[in-house]
Image 1 (cartoon, helix red, strand yellow):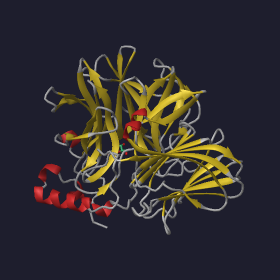
Image 2 (spheres, protein in one colour):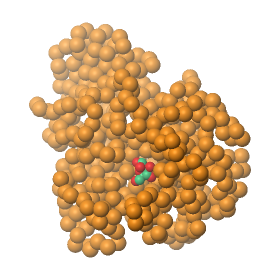
Image 3 (cartoon, helix red, strand yellow):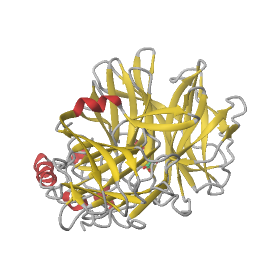
Image 4 (cartoon, protein in one colour):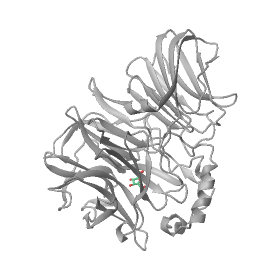
Length: 494
Ligand code: FRU
């Protein structure tokens, strides 16, 4: 493992030499795990998606970026733009730590449009001489030439009384003619929450309005990356609580991402809501954010990684990627997450087959691949349980297993190849609401995203198999299943 002193971690990208970056790029280019249709950093570490917006005919997708290596160092925002949400153009750094207030990182935030201009609000992270953290929320305006002007003094110079400096990730939105900023916070009693600020217009005065009053009074020590939106008149608060103990199959990852749904009263800030629901049941998913697409659909993108975890590519000079865009809907009162329809634009070479599978393991042709989309329709199921083995070879495979009676679906990556560390266990399990009828699986060089039953559940994970582990196998415990398999190669990249 490469050693990262504090000095090295907080070195500026601007201070690097071309030779140094070329060397790092060469190292990254030797990685056997480059993603092809997911957004990944050219070098260094990517984390949260930031500033997502559809503006003037273009999608803007930025992310947290430390360019110099696979550690959480000095954070910048790197921007990509897209006409269709699935093919991207790299626009490089859009926000850099060039002020005292953000000297230790341009942390996460959101985008909004106001008076035909594009704006961001982000967290300025500053450490003083004693290494104490200071958080401020800063508005920045994108000028016609594409450069960004930070508006100082900051919109929110410090946390209000009663909250610690763990105060970040503003999500700005407009509602009923008012502007709001929702911020992830920690109370002085070390519990997490989300607070709301209000402004007449985003370049004006931001007033502390109060805390969102949920029934989750004592739910983790910090809530990161909050988001708020409405679907079909239901209010949804999305956030990432840290410090939740695992309970059975739930909350297995180091930190959680999920939502509560109900009715939020913007006068009293009282939120009547149902239980906290996890957004994803895989190993690597965090800090999701949403925007509306060109047709007004709510789209979610997450970070396919977790904090405080080492990944197999770290020594190759890069880490992490973003998830594919998902469309959120509410059907029968439940939130569903489906792959965004534009992902169909990436499909090449359709292969379709119908067939039975039984307890004799069967390798299916031509379902080999490393980058593809696979739709498995389960037309009949008399099996007590069945397994799909993806990215398989003699010594590696990633298993999706379904138990018919309990409707449990699991993802096992014990034999997938190299693994992140430390991670609790090698299996993730979730119980479906209805019998499994369909799986839509997106496989890239080092990831798998599994959508069950038209968005009922999603399991997102990094996997690090060899590229020669490209086979697909199916087997039941007993009984048989009748499947329709549709596979598309995906050959388009960033
Ligand atoms: C979440 C997070 C945010 C913060 C950013 C820093 O992963 O910790 O709360 O703004 O990452 O990179």
